[in-house]
Image (cartoon, protein in one colour):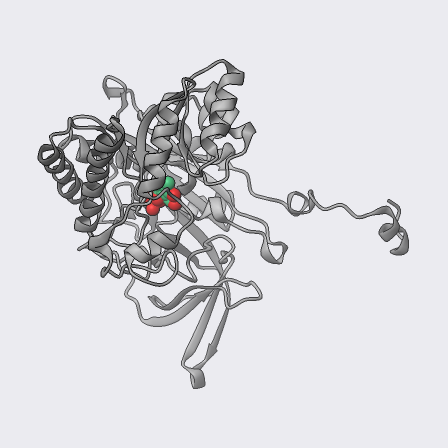
Length: 475
Ligand SMILES: Cc1ncc(COP(=O)(O)O)c(C=O)c1O
């Protein structure tokens, strides 16, 4: 990638396509799907299928756009990329270079982020059952620990004492969300309204629990309270609902100030930010071109915080946001080679098999609408309606009733928007190997995750000697 155009920012060379699916992914003049400077047909031949492909430029672009969108409306904003969305090391390096901190859920993601040079002060550690070992790594590295159970106060204090350090802590809250009691979003966390879903989840402390925690922490020298956090999650794509949540965060700040004398210097309003495209994406295909943009979310949420602070006479807290899918989603595609095609006109069905499966696109079957295109004829008219399926011993539907051009064995299909929650949640069901990932930067493509081999899948298995003996094999 070219030299930096602004101090600290890598210059981005935006490709021009005849149809853009995102800034760096689209259909070129040859009718093929391209990721930045590479033709997907050629990438599939070079690296094999199934294959995840990521665009470095799109990661950088999305991180900047998020920060710029919120920065335009608020004086003190930090983007903490939610590492869980795509926790590959190469991605974390990019985020760190872009100045993004991170939400680390658990010791693994915290370790990866620290390994990639992310300063501990830009990380938060989330989780409702943290181990003493993970708390110790957080304390040693100045990572803010979002406390999420009563006894964590004493656990963290004890570890901090042992390390001879003051631990940075926040409190993960469970907001009341009264205005969302009759708002029914996506059933991300079971049935019920958005408020009911939030209340039914294990995360977060109620208001009385939060007050009690703050008071206890105030009496402990080895703890420094720095934030309260809340994560609304991807239950909804309505910017006003996020503004409701942000306003309640400030109401809590004011109440806490009254009840404990402590007003949080920072609020962390989590992730769950949606993105849409005309071809649709996101849970149940809800996210189309009417989905709020990053800028729309910022324009709704930031003034809500500022107004609530004015109303309560509070100074503006620092604002942390934890976008995961909104940054990573559009940065990736998954390529699958077409195999068997089965037609049963009496049932009105044609199944097009690809070597991708719901092991690789685990949420395709349930919640995510992954737009599928013919990568080698991405502009050809769609004449067939087919179910795109993988080959696993479950229905393995990657896309039901999809409109595609006539497809033959050997063709290449691409599933868009697979940069988030695909590789990091992929599985080995049916002893299937997981795909490789390549990252494209201009015309350069490099493997960032090795393709799994059967020996990798087997590597954790052990066969007791007596079983080997009974099988007539040598141990
Ligand atoms: C605490 C927290 N922050 C951020 C995120 C990222 O959410 P999303 O990828 O929907 O932005 C999650 C997702 O589960 C989360 O639990």
